[in-house]
Image 1 (cartoon, rainbow, N blue to C red):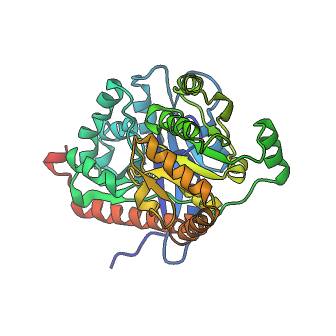
Image 2: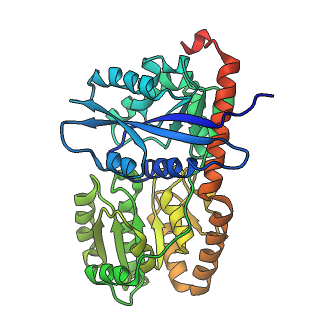
Image 3: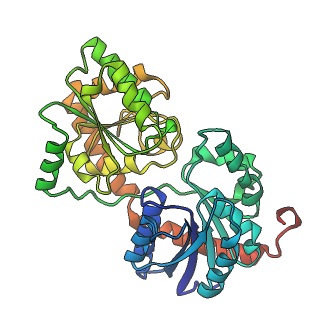
Length: 396
């Protein structure tokens, strides 16, 4: 029997400039994995990430270094600059990883293009695709070539697995890894009160939505749902708070005016600490057209905020309809309106769903369980890499 190593050195290649979603999860994992766990090796994780231009380190680099993580910055002048190839080789030589993992289409391409998958076990993480326009769709096709060479491909929900099989990834190389969430710690009361004052909130119910303001997040559907309820007289007193920023900001503001609900909708912008908003929320609405393993759902469950969400991607794998939340069809504002109306009209249902959801994430989505699962995956990849070398001709 092979004795597990005491320490696994992991180099994570990720393209990110802010700290949300996958970047936040990666930093959290790196901090926790340094602690030796009984029966499992400790993990020393370093990050290689891209930064364009000569400005100061971006928010992701700053946060990672602030957490004590070694960061290799791959400097580039433009989108398709080749300079980071040599920089990544230097980072690999300096860090001497046991495992390489990548987190984006560009990162996957770099590992494949440099042939690093022939030298190290390579785990490619996919957090979902953005298909805003034909450029995104064309860019995503690089994965059709890159991912076939990965030792393991990790996706955030079972619903995405067929996508990778269609790209040519062997089914037995695909693994499912949902995100995790820490126990909710409420923001100080004075901070919550300050946010309440800034948004001019009063006793009326607050419908919260957190996420990037991009088309696939479906915020336009949420505004349409509110206007449907207003027309019926059921949602005239609600306040809608959208936390986040993105390319749809101005379009959504125009839509609120066009629908006549601009006085009920607050655009809070990007916020590094969303805890006060959970404390003020009556419910969370997730109107997305596509999702993987959304942090906002897990965070809302942990915070005890009842949820109405579209049944897309990995959402129904986390949230059980009528048990831990309400699920509605995608791109159906009338159904979203009905779900919101139902929760607002039934305080007992809200309390039941919130308690059940909080218990569910505490039992199944803890950072500790997530950390153990990833360490086991590293061990699996190391074993498989040693067993399967040399790389078959089909993956070259």
